[in-house]
Amino acid sequence: MKIRLFQQYLLEQKIDLALFFHPDPTINYFIQMEPSNAILSITPKKSRVWLTSLDKRPLLKNIILHNLLHNLKQNWEKEIKSANLKKIGLNHSSLTLEQFKKVKKLFPKSTFIDITRGVRNLRKEKTTFELQCIKEACRLTSQAFHALTKELPRKNLKTELDVAFFLEKYIQDQGAEIAFPTIAAMGKNAATPHHKTSLTKLSKGFLLVDFGAKFKNYCADMTRILFLGKPTAKEKAWYDLLLKAQMEAINSVQEGISFLALDTIVRKKLGKYSSFFIHSLGHGLGIEVHEAPVFSDKQERVKKNVPFTIEPGIYLPGKVGLRIEDTLVWDGKKVEILTKVTKDLIAVDF
Image 1 (cartoon, one colour):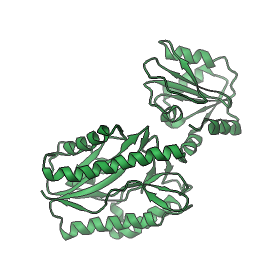
Image 2: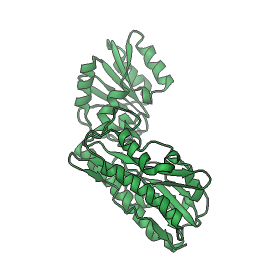
Image 3: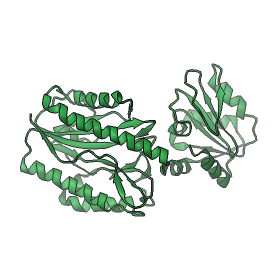
Image 4: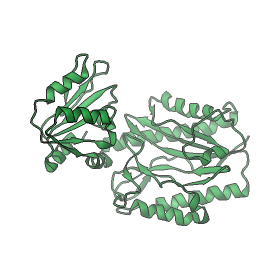
Protein backbone atom coordinates (compact mmCIF):
# COMPACT_ATOMS: atom_id res chain seq x y z
CA MET A 1 0.00 0.00 0.00
CA LYS A 2 1.72 3.17 -1.29
CA ILE A 3 5.21 1.72 -0.77
CA ARG A 4 6.55 3.56 -3.83
CA LEU A 5 5.19 6.89 -2.58
CA PHE A 6 6.80 6.36 0.80
CA GLN A 7 10.11 5.44 -0.80
CA GLN A 8 9.94 8.71 -2.75
CA TYR A 9 9.39 10.51 0.56
CA LEU A 10 12.52 8.86 1.97
CA LEU A 11 14.52 9.99 -1.05
CA GLU A 12 13.30 13.57 -0.70
CA GLN A 13 14.15 13.61 3.01
CA LYS A 14 17.50 11.87 2.37
CA ILE A 15 16.57 9.10 4.82
CA ASP A 16 18.46 5.83 4.29
CA LEU A 17 16.11 3.54 6.22
CA ALA A 18 12.71 3.67 7.93
CA LEU A 19 11.99 1.13 10.65
CA PHE A 20 8.59 0.18 12.04
CA PHE A 21 8.06 -2.10 15.03
CA HIS A 22 5.00 -4.02 16.18
CA PRO A 23 2.38 -2.90 17.19
CA ASP A 24 2.76 0.17 14.95
CA PRO A 25 -0.42 0.16 12.79
CA THR A 26 1.64 1.47 9.89
CA ILE A 27 2.90 -2.12 9.49
CA ASN A 28 -0.72 -3.25 9.11
CA TYR A 29 -1.17 -0.47 6.56
CA PHE A 30 1.72 -1.51 4.36
CA ILE A 31 1.24 -5.30 4.51
CA GLN A 32 -2.59 -5.25 4.74
CA MET A 33 -2.85 -7.63 7.67
CA GLU A 34 -2.59 -7.46 11.45
CA PRO A 35 0.41 -9.60 12.48
CA SER A 36 1.04 -11.00 15.94
CA ASN A 37 4.57 -9.60 15.73
CA ALA A 38 6.49 -7.92 12.94
CA ILE A 39 9.29 -5.57 11.96
CA LEU A 40 9.17 -3.60 8.72
CA SER A 41 12.15 -1.92 7.07
CA ILE A 42 11.87 0.39 4.07
CA THR A 43 14.74 1.96 2.15
CA PRO A 44 14.44 4.11 -0.97
CA LYS A 45 14.98 0.96 -3.05
CA LYS A 46 13.88 -2.04 -1.00
CA SER A 47 11.19 -3.01 1.52
CA ARG A 48 11.30 -6.01 3.84
CA VAL A 49 9.06 -7.39 6.53
CA TRP A 50 9.90 -9.95 9.20
CA LEU A 51 6.99 -12.05 10.45
CA THR A 52 6.91 -14.88 12.96
CA SER A 53 5.97 -18.37 11.85
CA LEU A 54 2.70 -18.00 13.76
CA ASP A 55 1.11 -15.77 11.12
CA LYS A 56 -0.38 -16.58 7.75
CA ARG A 57 1.87 -15.42 4.91
CA PRO A 58 0.35 -12.39 3.16
CA LEU A 59 0.54 -11.86 -0.58
CA LEU A 60 2.78 -8.83 -0.92
CA LYS A 61 3.77 -6.57 -3.79
CA ASN A 62 7.01 -4.60 -3.58
CA ILE A 63 7.83 -6.00 -0.11
CA ILE A 64 10.24 -8.88 0.51
CA LEU A 65 8.84 -11.37 3.03
CA HIS A 66 11.36 -13.02 5.33
CA ASN A 67 10.58 -16.51 6.60
CA LEU A 68 11.75 -16.44 10.18
CA LEU A 69 13.25 -18.93 12.52
CA HIS A 70 12.17 -18.82 16.15
CA ASN A 71 14.18 -15.73 17.04
CA LEU A 72 12.59 -12.70 15.40
CA LYS A 73 15.05 -10.27 16.95
CA GLN A 74 18.27 -11.93 15.75
CA ASN A 75 16.96 -12.33 12.20
CA TRP A 76 16.20 -8.70 11.48
CA GLU A 77 19.25 -7.37 13.31
CA LYS A 78 21.56 -9.59 11.27
CA GLU A 79 20.02 -8.45 8.00
CA ILE A 80 20.39 -4.70 8.48
CA LYS A 81 23.18 -4.20 11.02
CA SER A 82 25.97 -4.18 8.44
CA ALA A 83 24.39 -1.44 6.34
CA ASN A 84 26.01 2.02 6.28
CA LEU A 85 23.08 4.16 7.36
CA LYS A 86 23.50 7.86 8.04
CA LYS A 87 19.84 8.81 8.62
CA ILE A 88 17.22 6.46 10.04
CA GLY A 89 13.53 7.33 10.15
CA LEU A 90 11.44 6.25 13.15
CA ASN A 91 7.73 6.70 13.75
CA HIS A 92 7.92 8.37 17.16
CA SER A 93 4.16 8.23 17.68
CA SER A 94 4.30 4.41 17.88
CA LEU A 95 7.84 3.79 19.15
CA THR A 96 8.62 2.53 22.65
CA LEU A 97 11.67 3.65 24.60
CA GLU A 98 12.97 0.07 24.57
CA GLN A 99 12.72 -0.11 20.78
CA PHE A 100 14.49 3.23 20.39
CA LYS A 101 17.33 2.14 22.66
CA LYS A 102 17.74 -1.05 20.64
CA VAL A 103 18.00 0.82 17.32
CA LYS A 104 20.35 3.40 18.81
CA LYS A 105 22.62 0.62 20.04
CA LEU A 106 22.62 -1.06 16.62
CA PHE A 107 23.43 2.20 14.82
CA PRO A 108 25.47 4.37 17.22
CA LYS A 109 26.75 6.64 14.43
CA SER A 110 23.39 7.23 12.73
CA THR A 111 21.12 10.26 13.02
CA PHE A 112 17.49 9.51 13.89
CA ILE A 113 14.64 11.39 12.22
CA ASP A 114 11.01 11.51 13.35
CA ILE A 115 8.87 10.50 10.35
CA THR A 116 5.52 10.68 12.15
CA ARG A 117 4.18 13.55 10.00
CA GLY A 118 5.30 11.88 6.77
CA VAL A 119 3.56 8.64 7.72
CA ARG A 120 0.37 10.45 8.75
CA ASN A 121 0.23 12.41 5.52
CA LEU A 122 0.76 9.25 3.48
CA ARG A 123 -2.07 7.42 5.23
CA LYS A 124 -4.43 10.41 5.25
CA GLU A 125 -5.54 10.42 1.60
CA LYS A 126 -7.22 7.13 0.77
CA THR A 127 -7.03 5.05 -2.39
CA THR A 128 -10.14 3.76 -4.15
CA PHE A 129 -9.65 0.39 -2.43
CA GLU A 130 -9.35 1.99 1.00
CA LEU A 131 -12.49 4.07 0.48
CA GLN A 132 -14.40 0.98 -0.63
CA CYS A 133 -13.39 -0.78 2.58
CA ILE A 134 -14.40 2.18 4.75
CA LYS A 135 -17.73 2.49 2.94
CA GLU A 136 -18.43 -1.20 3.52
CA ALA A 137 -17.52 -0.85 7.20
CA CYS A 138 -19.94 2.08 7.42
CA ARG A 139 -22.67 0.11 5.67
CA LEU A 140 -22.35 -2.75 8.15
CA THR A 141 -22.31 -0.30 11.06
CA SER A 142 -25.51 1.32 9.82
CA GLN A 143 -27.14 -2.07 9.37
CA ALA A 144 -26.24 -3.04 12.92
CA PHE A 145 -27.89 0.07 14.34
CA HIS A 146 -31.01 -0.55 12.26
CA ALA A 147 -31.13 -4.09 13.66
CA LEU A 148 -30.82 -2.67 17.19
CA THR A 149 -33.86 -0.44 16.66
CA LYS A 150 -35.85 -3.58 15.80
CA GLU A 151 -34.49 -5.59 18.73
CA LEU A 152 -34.96 -3.11 21.58
CA PRO A 153 -38.81 -3.20 21.54
CA ARG A 154 -38.63 -6.96 22.15
CA LYS A 155 -37.13 -6.15 25.59
CA ASN A 156 -34.57 -8.95 25.43
CA LEU A 157 -31.72 -6.50 26.03
CA LYS A 158 -31.51 -5.57 29.71
CA THR A 159 -28.19 -3.74 30.19
CA GLU A 160 -25.65 -1.55 28.40
CA LEU A 161 -23.48 -4.63 27.92
CA ASP A 162 -26.38 -6.46 26.27
CA VAL A 163 -26.71 -3.61 23.78
CA ALA A 164 -22.98 -3.55 23.04
CA PHE A 165 -22.87 -7.33 22.64
CA PHE A 166 -25.83 -7.25 20.25
CA LEU A 167 -24.18 -4.66 18.00
CA GLU A 168 -20.80 -6.39 18.01
CA LYS A 169 -22.27 -9.83 17.35
CA TYR A 170 -24.29 -8.47 14.45
CA ILE A 171 -21.16 -7.00 12.88
CA GLN A 172 -19.14 -10.17 13.43
CA ASP A 173 -21.93 -12.31 12.01
CA GLN A 174 -21.49 -10.38 8.75
CA GLY A 175 -17.82 -11.41 8.64
CA ALA A 176 -16.39 -8.09 9.81
CA GLU A 177 -14.47 -7.10 12.93
CA ILE A 178 -15.05 -4.54 15.67
CA ALA A 179 -13.21 -1.25 15.09
CA PHE A 180 -13.06 -0.38 18.81
CA PRO A 181 -14.86 -1.38 22.02
CA THR A 182 -18.50 -0.35 21.72
CA ILE A 183 -19.77 2.41 23.99
CA ALA A 184 -23.35 1.90 25.15
CA ALA A 185 -24.27 4.59 27.68
CA MET A 186 -27.59 4.85 29.46
CA GLY A 187 -28.85 8.23 30.68
CA LYS A 188 -26.36 10.17 32.78
CA ASN A 189 -23.59 7.66 31.97
CA ALA A 190 -23.34 9.30 28.54
CA ALA A 191 -22.27 12.57 30.19
CA THR A 192 -18.84 10.90 30.22
CA PRO A 193 -17.88 10.85 26.51
CA HIS A 194 -15.68 7.75 26.87
CA HIS A 195 -17.98 5.89 29.25
CA LYS A 196 -17.01 2.27 29.86
CA THR A 197 -19.97 0.10 28.94
CA SER A 198 -21.29 -1.54 32.09
CA LEU A 199 -24.02 -3.64 33.66
CA THR A 200 -26.15 -0.51 34.10
CA LYS A 201 -29.75 -1.51 33.43
CA LEU A 202 -31.67 0.05 30.59
CA SER A 203 -34.27 2.52 31.82
CA LYS A 204 -36.30 5.48 30.62
CA GLY A 205 -34.14 8.10 28.94
CA PHE A 206 -31.49 8.61 26.27
CA LEU A 207 -29.43 5.59 25.20
CA LEU A 208 -26.22 6.50 23.34
CA VAL A 209 -24.31 3.99 21.22
CA ASP A 210 -20.88 4.77 19.74
CA PHE A 211 -19.47 1.89 17.68
CA GLY A 212 -18.07 0.82 14.35
CA ALA A 213 -17.26 -2.12 12.13
CA LYS A 214 -13.82 -2.87 10.71
CA PHE A 215 -13.74 -4.30 7.19
CA LYS A 216 -10.45 -5.53 5.69
CA ASN A 217 -8.55 -3.53 8.33
CA TYR A 218 -10.47 -0.26 7.75
CA CYS A 219 -12.68 1.36 10.37
CA ALA A 220 -16.08 3.00 10.58
CA ASP A 221 -17.21 5.23 13.44
CA MET A 222 -20.78 6.24 14.23
CA THR A 223 -22.77 7.49 17.21
CA ARG A 224 -26.54 7.40 17.46
CA ILE A 225 -29.04 8.09 20.21
CA LEU A 226 -32.33 6.40 20.98
CA PHE A 227 -34.87 7.32 23.62
CA LEU A 228 -36.36 4.61 25.80
CA GLY A 229 -39.86 5.78 26.57
CA LYS A 230 -41.31 9.13 25.53
CA PRO A 231 -39.00 12.18 25.56
CA THR A 232 -40.11 15.46 27.09
CA ALA A 233 -40.23 18.67 25.07
CA LYS A 234 -36.93 19.74 26.66
CA GLU A 235 -35.24 16.46 25.80
CA LYS A 236 -36.44 16.74 22.20
CA ALA A 237 -35.14 20.31 22.07
CA TRP A 238 -31.66 19.22 23.21
CA TYR A 239 -31.52 16.57 20.53
CA ASP A 240 -32.90 18.81 17.78
CA LEU A 241 -30.36 21.53 18.59
CA LEU A 242 -27.48 19.06 18.45
CA LEU A 243 -28.66 17.56 15.16
CA LYS A 244 -29.06 21.01 13.60
CA ALA A 245 -25.54 21.93 14.71
CA GLN A 246 -24.13 18.76 13.19
CA MET A 247 -26.00 19.21 9.91
CA GLU A 248 -24.93 22.84 9.64
CA ALA A 249 -21.31 21.71 9.87
CA ILE A 250 -21.85 18.90 7.35
CA ASN A 251 -23.57 21.27 4.92
CA SER A 252 -20.61 23.67 5.25
CA VAL A 253 -18.06 21.06 4.17
CA GLN A 254 -16.21 22.07 1.02
CA GLU A 255 -12.73 21.72 -0.44
CA GLY A 256 -10.19 23.64 1.62
CA ILE A 257 -12.32 24.64 4.60
CA SER A 258 -10.44 24.14 7.86
CA PHE A 259 -11.72 21.72 10.46
CA LEU A 260 -11.39 24.47 13.04
CA ALA A 261 -13.83 26.56 10.97
CA LEU A 262 -16.33 23.69 11.05
CA ASP A 263 -15.81 23.45 14.81
CA THR A 264 -16.61 27.17 15.15
CA ILE A 265 -19.82 26.74 13.14
CA VAL A 266 -21.02 24.02 15.52
CA ARG A 267 -20.17 25.91 18.70
CA LYS A 268 -21.92 29.02 17.44
CA LYS A 269 -25.05 26.99 16.67
CA LEU A 270 -25.01 25.36 20.10
CA GLY A 271 -25.13 28.78 21.76
CA LYS A 272 -25.34 28.53 25.54
CA TYR A 273 -24.64 24.80 25.33
CA SER A 274 -21.31 25.28 23.53
CA SER A 275 -19.44 25.17 26.85
CA PHE A 276 -20.83 21.64 27.32
CA PHE A 277 -19.24 20.49 24.06
CA ILE A 278 -15.96 19.35 25.60
CA HIS A 279 -14.03 17.62 22.82
CA SER A 280 -12.88 18.08 19.24
CA LEU A 281 -15.48 18.10 16.47
CA GLY A 282 -14.06 14.97 14.87
CA HIS A 283 -11.06 13.08 13.53
CA GLY A 284 -9.76 11.22 10.54
CA LEU A 285 -9.97 7.44 10.33
CA GLY A 286 -8.65 4.53 8.31
CA ILE A 287 -6.52 1.63 9.56
CA GLU A 288 -6.99 3.26 12.97
CA VAL A 289 -10.25 4.70 14.18
CA HIS A 290 -8.41 7.88 15.17
CA GLU A 291 -5.80 9.13 12.73
CA ALA A 292 -5.02 12.17 10.58
CA PRO A 293 -6.43 14.68 9.93
CA VAL A 294 -6.18 16.03 13.47
CA PHE A 295 -8.88 18.67 13.88
CA SER A 296 -6.92 20.77 16.39
CA ASP A 297 -4.18 21.38 13.80
CA LYS A 298 -4.78 24.79 12.20
CA GLN A 299 -3.25 23.56 8.94
CA GLU A 300 -5.67 20.64 8.49
CA ARG A 301 -8.35 21.20 5.86
CA VAL A 302 -10.98 19.21 4.01
CA LYS A 303 -9.43 17.43 1.03
CA LYS A 304 -10.64 14.97 -1.56
CA ASN A 305 -10.66 11.30 -0.49
CA VAL A 306 -9.74 12.06 3.13
CA PRO A 307 -12.48 10.54 5.34
CA PHE A 308 -13.31 12.07 8.71
CA THR A 309 -16.02 12.22 11.35
CA ILE A 310 -18.21 15.05 12.58
CA GLU A 311 -19.43 14.38 16.12
CA PRO A 312 -20.70 17.31 18.18
CA GLY A 313 -21.91 16.61 21.69
CA ILE A 314 -23.64 18.14 24.69
CA TYR A 315 -22.60 16.77 28.08
CA LEU A 316 -24.47 17.88 31.18
CA PRO A 317 -22.60 16.39 34.17
CA GLY A 318 -24.73 14.08 36.27
CA LYS A 319 -27.71 14.52 33.94
CA VAL A 320 -27.30 13.50 30.33
CA GLY A 321 -24.88 13.17 27.44
CA LEU A 322 -25.75 13.52 23.76
CA ARG A 323 -23.54 12.97 20.71
CA ILE A 324 -24.32 12.45 17.04
CA GLU A 325 -21.53 11.18 14.81
CA ASP A 326 -21.14 10.34 11.15
CA THR A 327 -18.26 9.24 8.97
CA LEU A 328 -17.93 11.46 5.89
CA VAL A 329 -15.76 11.99 2.83
CA TRP A 330 -15.40 14.84 0.34
CA ASP A 331 -15.35 13.31 -3.14
CA GLY A 332 -14.15 16.44 -4.93
CA LYS A 333 -17.64 17.73 -5.70
CA LYS A 334 -19.79 17.04 -2.66
CA VAL A 335 -19.67 15.64 0.85
CA GLU A 336 -20.91 12.08 1.22
CA ILE A 337 -22.26 10.78 4.52
CA LEU A 338 -21.08 7.17 4.68
CA THR A 339 -23.04 6.19 7.80
CA LYS A 340 -26.43 6.42 6.17
CA VAL A 341 -28.80 5.17 8.86
CA THR A 342 -31.46 7.55 10.20
CA LYS A 343 -30.67 10.30 12.70
CA ASP A 344 -34.30 10.82 13.70
CA LEU A 345 -34.73 10.46 17.45
CA ILE A 346 -36.32 7.03 17.68
CA ALA A 347 -38.52 6.58 20.74
CA VAL A 348 -38.70 2.96 21.87
CA ASP A 349 -41.68 1.81 23.90
CA PHE A 350 -40.29 1.08 27.35
